[in-house]
Amino acid sequence: MPRFFFDFVQADQRTPDSEGVEFADVEEAYLEVFRTAQEMWSELLKQRRDPHLCSFEVRNHTGDILLVFPFREVVDCCTDRAGMRAS
Image (cartoon, rainbow, N blue to C red; front, side):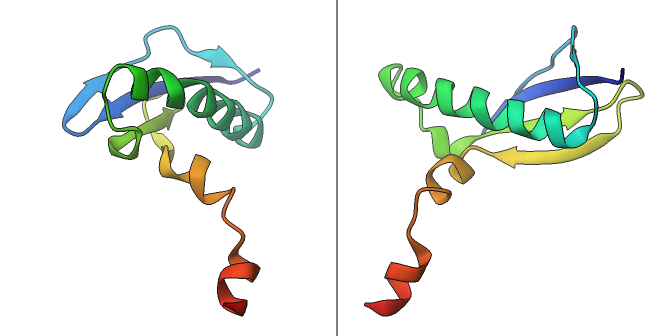
């Protein structure tokens, strides 16, 4: 199973993931990074850190960045876009 690494980025600070986690594919890695960002959101706020400035860069075992997940996607998924257009 492939190993994926979730590097945490806040503004210009990067915390690399040196261990990684195995997932069947990049879609499963995306779902996990989404859940992790959801869990981290409130903790970041408690620490007076703006989650909007945070993201994960998901890398494969060779270091290639497969996707960048901005934490704002956690909030964006809750937005009723259809209701916004109707207003």
